[in-house]
Image (tube, rainbow over all chains, first blue to last red; front, side, top):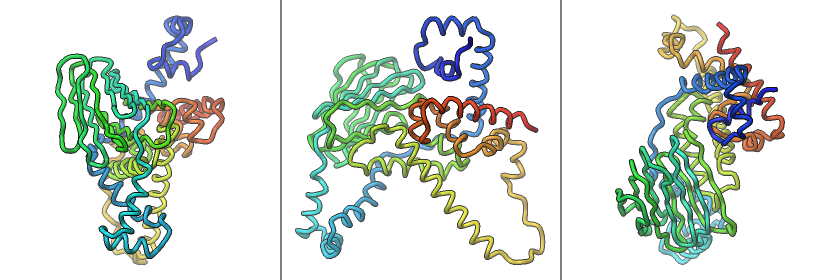
Amino acid sequence: MHLDDRTIDELGTVALEMVARRHMDECAFCQARAAQLDDIRRSLTLIDHPVPTIDVNTLVARARQRRAPVLIAGAGALLAAALAAALPSSPVHRAIARVLHRHHSAPTIQRAAVTRGGNSIAIQLHDAAARVMFRSRQTAGTVSIAADTGHALRITQIDGESVGYAVLPSGVKIDNAGSVASYEVGVPAGVRVLILVGTDTVFVTGPEHTAPRVIRLAAP
Amino acid sequence: MFRYVDRMIGDAAAAADIAQETFVRLYRRREPPDDLRAWLATVAHNLVRDDRRRQARRARLLAARAPEHTMADPPPDPDARIGDADEGHAVRRPLAALSEREQRLLLLRSEGLSYRELGLILALNEASVGTLLARARAAFQEALRAP
């Protein structure tokens, strides 16, 4: 009896039962199957292009640029939409803006566990603070946290080795290469934050969630 | 996300644009989806389909406007000329030979998505994912070996 593909495929990502591990060590058939699966993975990398860098500010600008017309249409009245679009300082515009921002409530507890090249980063969001923890030594770890409303964010190092972090106009940036540390980032109530771990983006909003959430991103 | 789309369509610039648009759509949501990776993969795939439809429409329009008689053969496409010698071409060809579902299964699994997520994205019973994935892998390996 041999291991199925799923078990063999997950050999490197989940803890296998001892019996499966022992079988893998001894069974030439399953070792050959594991090699075949590796071959497929390697073949696919031959068609890969370099991953482009996407600037988070460009992304946010692009999202905002096209959100306005949709939301204005949602307001229902053609006249109000025309006035709001034409006169940003008008009461109609302000009323729509109030409606749009009403949904931006405080972030509730969320977690994002990100594994990159064997390194692990955990991000926990509580009511008004994000906690960023590097669980293992980072070979290259950069985390950027930005508020989509342009609010200033506060950052504090909680523990670990002394490493680089900075408060920038666009948010906070942690450059944690080569070290292990935890940070707390204060997020004002009602602010939506955007978290970028390396090139993986985790968007965090906190409108209607009442239960903890787990978001996992795959290792590249 | 970029890598998955890039492998699907083989065009880095279009893949970057689709990956970016996928995250723009995520940003515009009021709340994160229940299963983030499944949601991202589904949206990205819909955008890939839209992109393919646009390309096909453009190709039809260009074909309709082409002159009936050409004086000479068009110059060969530089990519096509080097294509056969290119390692990537040797992988892209067998990948393109798979059905769309097989391609998605193979590529999403190689990105580390679980059987449950694959079932969710492709509207498959989780128990069938293993069988279909094994078939996709076998077909890919066979096409890789084919001359």
